[in-house]
Length: 367
Image (cartoon, rainbow, N blue to C red; front, top):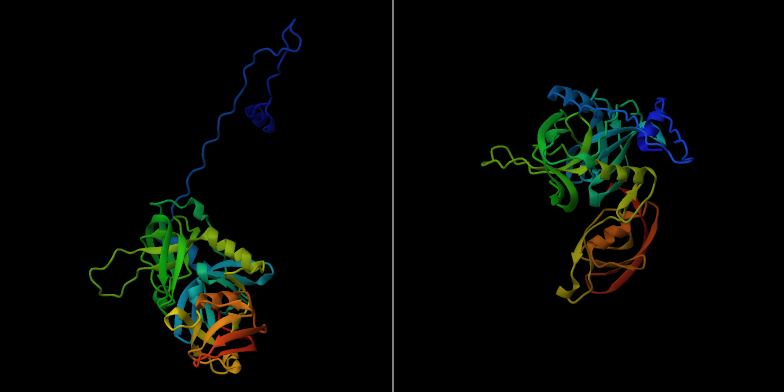
C-alpha cells in the first residue's frame, strides 16, 4: 500500500478497490489513487512584545548571591522546576563561576522576592555550569526550554538577568551573530581563565550579574545560558559594540541530567566539594633543576594540608600514587573525591627533601 493510501485509511476514508481485468487473472488494472491534500504548515510563533517576554521569563529566574574569600558576587539562575528525586525542591541551572568558592550561597526569586538556601548538587568547571537545589522552592515556575539546535544567525534573542547585581531583572535584546564559537573567558573576580567552546555569540549587552541567566528566543523559550560578555565600565570611549556568549541549552541540560543521575566524570563533580586546603600554581622543574609539580602558594589555617605539614613553596609531585606535573593535574584528581576521603601526598619541601603524608579531606566550597 502506498504511503498516500495508508494515510487515507488511517483517516477512515474509503479507498478505491483494485478490480482484476477479465481474462488476465491476477493482473491489476490501472487505477487512479485519491491523494489527500497536504496539510498547511503550522503558522510560525508570534514574537512577544518586550513587556510580554519579560513577564514570561522573569518569574522563572532567581538572583544568586555568593560570599567567598574574595568577596561577594552576584549572578542569575534558571529555574528548571522540581525534578525527581527532589520533588519538593526546585532545581536551578547557573554558571559554575557564579558559585565558585562560595562559602555562603543564597537565591532570591525574581517573581515574589522569596529567599532560599542553596545546595550545590554538582558542577563542571570546564564547561562553566553548575546545578543547584533550592529546598522548599517547588512552587517556583519553571522556565520554558527551547532547543539550541534551532538557533540561526540573525535571529532575535534577549538575555535576561540580574545585571550589575542590583537584584532587578534587566532585559538585553540583540541578535545571534555567530554559532559554534570558542572563546577564552576571564573571571572578573579572581582573574582565572577558562576556554569555552561551541558557544552562541550575540550582540546583546550582557552585564556582570547576568551570568547564569537565560538567553531566550523571540517567544521566551530558553536557548542558552549567558556566560560571558565584553561589558565595559561606564564612561569608557569609544564604547565597543556589545558582544556576549551563551552556552547552548541542549549542552547545558545534558550536564543537568548527568548531575541528577549522580554520574561523576573527570570534569563533573557530584555532591559536596572536598577541601585539601591549598592554593597551587604550576611548578616547572627544569627552571630550578627539580621535578615538575603543583607548587603551594597558600596553605589554609587548620586545613588538612596544614595538618600534614605542607607549607608555602612546597611542590606536590604525587597524589595517591599518581604523578602530579601541574596544578591542573592536582585539580583533576580532586574532582572525583569527596569530604572524608583519605589521600596520600608526596612533595618536595623548600630544602629539596622529599616528604610524604596522609590526610583526610574536609568539606569546602565548590571549586
